[in-house]
Image (cartoon, rainbow, N blue to C red; front, side, top):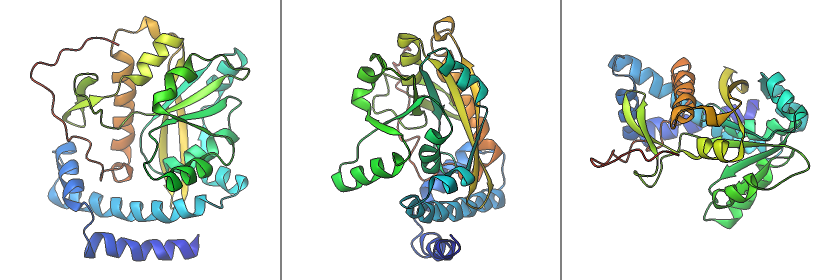
Length: 277
């Protein structure tokens, strides 16, 4: 890792100072999300983000060969008592979270910590080679990758071992009508309803995973139960709750979210009406 972090320092110089990779996107996202911060504060967060992004690149290389022991050492996971209780009761659960800190390492380490069968919903990459490599790396210690189009089949399927399905909740919905619009980081934001929809349809408990950075190369995920009976929540409430949990996670360590993503590229249609879940 020491050698890789030397490489990371070099990468940072290239993507920040020489190529300026998506600096305009990152800068706009930060200014809109933190209107109370000064220009110097925004610049400092942006610079730290690119340092972190450079670390993620080399840490992803390490993920190809990382041992089970080192994955556990570098990704601590806590708040597992309620998750274990769900397993003891034979209940399937959803683990919601965002692209915070090293989410790839979280995916690798998760099966080492829980009794549930760990599953992740994802959008397959167009390049088959990289798609297979991603599934191979994330699944090296037990995580099963399921394409988004097959999520409903998975949820409705009876399994001998209860499942814990990971949902990334901070991607941008392609259809601005089939989503939930809410204030997120001071901006009108479209949010996927998948977590809430599946939780209500298949009686799944929902947990939120907050990922924080302890120091360079070391992270911690803390789980918090959001609901046991999703159908007791008003339409949109679960979606709003987990999104605000993510907002709190981002605000606690603002440099470590994926700011280079064009999260707010779609605007709320004037004729939008929430149709429920």
